[in-house]
Length: 202
Image (cartoon, rainbow, N blue to C red):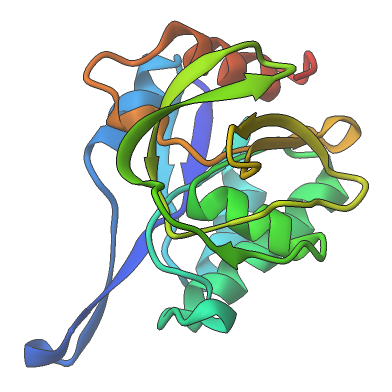
């Protein structure tokens, strides 16, 4: 089974003086359902770099949780890790899929501004665009309304919020919805990730 690495959120546990890396168990379940062996990366670049080099992953998943530090978040080590992982992926042609915060990282990396939005937390809504008409979950307070090349918009909500982006020639895809939070994983989400990690386009 081919490996897919995924990033983790940072949880600050003040009573123990700890900064913990963690991820919802549904994330590795989703990756496994797509046919890959999910392996979590710590928010420590020196370790992650060895994993990227030695494990030869088929792709990387940037997960949700933690706002970016520049937008009020408190996990700068995660920001640093994901930007360096994206540098590595772009240099080596390694596919990347980011959801929710993961898409925000991709957008910010390419110089796109995030804005505060209303009505996008714990709701389902319609998105429209190249991916067709989809009804997706939503759990975010920040989003993009405009992106810059090389990113392209694949889907928008009716209020103009960009819900999916891609960089075709670099094998990068982002969605604001969480594929792992569906009660039954959506076949189109799974097929999209499989196609991306096989480098068959978006």
